[in-house]
Image 1 (cartoon, helix red, strand yellow):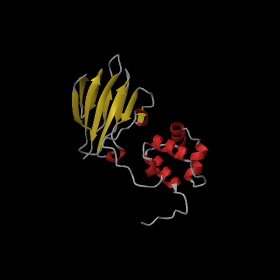
Image 2 (tube, rainbow, N blue to C red):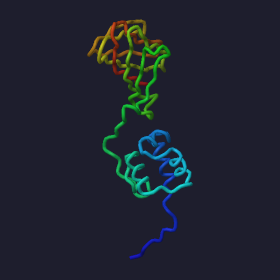
Image 3 (spheres, rainbow, N blue to C red):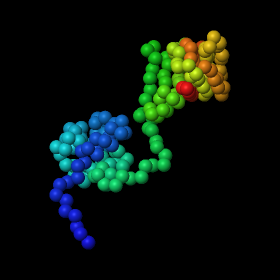
Image 4 (cartoon, rainbow, N blue to C red):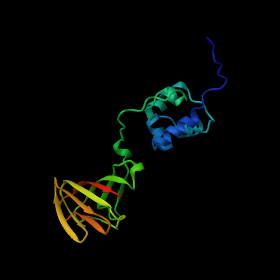
Length: 190
């Protein structure tokens, strides 16, 4: 049996940076999660500091990976169910703040198949320009009421109903009610 000599410590910096960026974490966020200063994280990523075992353990826990993966060893098996924490779900708001879209679909499907949680406050409207020819939206109202205008028609939808319509022309979703309305909006591109 031969013993391999290790002359240098593992290069944690590149692995740490890669894992952090793959999870969409800023240095500030990882610092907060791991309880390791932002300046120490920056030094580790630039290979200007080698972390202690305790720091590697904290970072591995914060990144939800095995210590061996952070140290450059074997990659742990991918989880069978990927979880996106609520605070990491991106969202967009209309300029007046009356509409909010939470982006539920993965970014790699954008432009093909997209889905959102749409919340519209009373009096709010999500007005959209035409999408490419053949595009369709499917709006399922979860609470409240929404009104859809598309292709020259208008239809009111109440909680539990779904509207399906072409969006290759201008279209809008409004809340004409007195309470916030919430729905799931799916956009299918050709």
